[in-house]
Length: 281
Image (cartoon, rainbow, N blue to C red):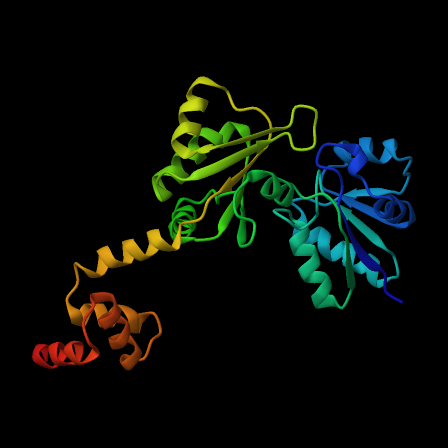
């Protein structure tokens, strides 16, 4: 009988956030796969956990995944932990979970701390609709594509960032989105936890004087529907009626619906749009 992969959430700062269920799972597992065994040994020692450990990280995530799957297929139970928080979120555990599903291995998640959700609830920004972006890509083209998508995003956005890249990232986000409300969270659940609601402009000015310290979660206000509508109106005002209709057709509308929407945008009748299109042919 095959074993199970247990995704075990560990504290993001405060050790009291460790759940009894995770402690039990780590004690009973045959093997713990840890992002950094040197870091995780401190956690395991604190909770008197003596289960054998092996490393599973970004640089061995595919090769080691197959090794772990073979062990689970042989009947062993494996517990996966990351340095802090919930495995598979901005973490190589994502790969292991996918390969386990493909191999028919049972995967279960033991809920617990996650920096992204902790920051979101502290941010003071809308929590009804949100998206998680994690770290910005290092590849320039991919980063540009992500920033372009984020510029139009109406949901609250959550990013992770390291202190040595914070200033550059704030500037890149500001350049892409314009000034927005943002909450910067750092050292979450720790003694010097900091939650700073501000704007991009003010945050950039603040960190010209202060050196960033600690790991950051950035929670950013989405673009309002009114702002998106205004931008759309400005864009079609520079188009001909035919180009306006084509814009909606490229977005997947049929011609009749595209004409109706273009007419609504312009405050004219659909008959007027139809007549203009006939005259342009």
